[in-house]
Length: 190
DNA sequence: GCTATTTGACCTAA
DNA sequence: TTAGGTCAAATAGC
Image 1: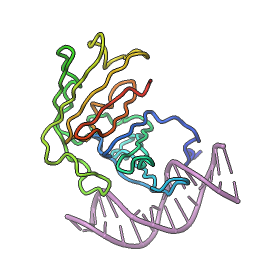
Image 2 (image 1 turned 180 degrees about the horizontal axis):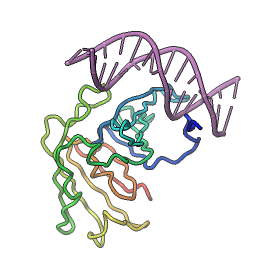
Image 3 (image 1 turned 90 degrees about the vertical axis):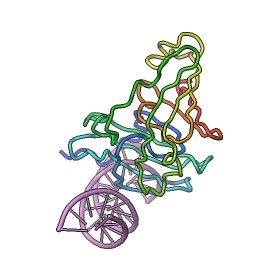
Image 4 (image 1 turned 30 degrees about the horizontal axis):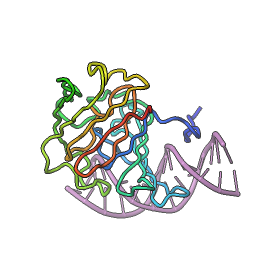
């Protein structure tokens, strides 16, 4: 039988993030757009560009009501094509964090992936790299792998960077918001 | 001509 | 019946 053409109402997104750019390190193909009740902005639907190879990852992008410059992006499904294949970058991401104590910096290459997307804010192209600054209390060695439900920490990303897969990786969700020239993250579990 | 995007229609859970 | 997710023909861009 044909699979349902409609996601079950209320189905949980694998993760949901707030971002000021729609770029996330993956290649997406738009397949639909809808005006949503109670929203001033249409909702955009994307699936992985490698869906033809069986990748079932999709995402739903909508501008934030409160902050029109920001986006709320919900991810559904996993990249069964393999994250490396879905990403345009030639090299896999370096480890998300180089832990060097209370402050740790990781360096990322910024990639302009959304080409001429009208949704893409003027981020990223001119800046060369992203740095993620981590401030976490307590044990820093496990903060990226399995944060406890009570842990609280934040990261900072120097602008220029679209949020990339490395930031979203893991078993927990992130929310980020623009703070002048940086993005701050916080664990959505709290 | 090929590929990606747009957009109205279609489908179905609520 | 409505709302929202997807399809697919038309269109645009290369």
